[in-house]
Length: 176
Image 1 (cartoon, rainbow, N blue to C red):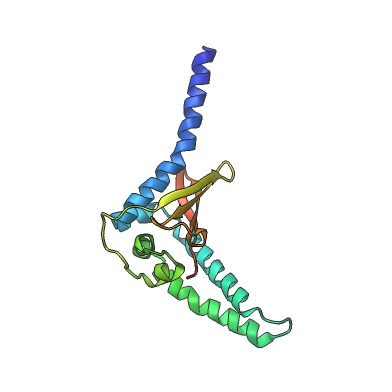
Image 2 (image 1 turned 30 degrees about the vertical axis):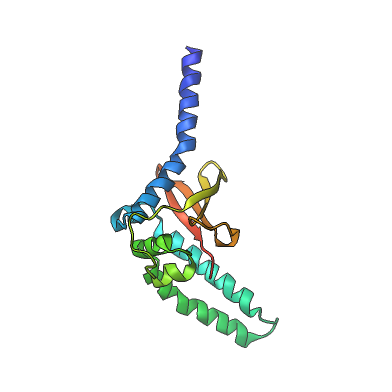
């Protein structure tokens, strides 16, 4: 009986470990097929959009680097962040995510502006460059476009277990 229980436990742990990889694969297939309904169901859109807004704000601050007490620069950064928000809200969609995934060089600009670099559904999916669990309910993956070796072009994905499903919560795309 103990061997049976141990076998069941090992089987459950193996299924748990494989589950986020299956979620990543299914998301990739939905993106490649440009199936907006399937993509919609695999992403937590409010969290994904907020993460991209945070990335843009951080990039603005890094580019401008306002001096302490420079209220005009701080106002400009805040205004730029507010202006970017509606663009992100309308551009970060299943179609926008599919566009970025199919781009030869996926970038934040490709996602937000929905530039369709390649419309081929036969295009190979980006390859998995690395992955790890970052907690019991969090999984992170690094994907690279085929033919790319430059780690600065890597796309970082974060999935979290939500309601029994691994959902894409965060994406870190190269800015350019």
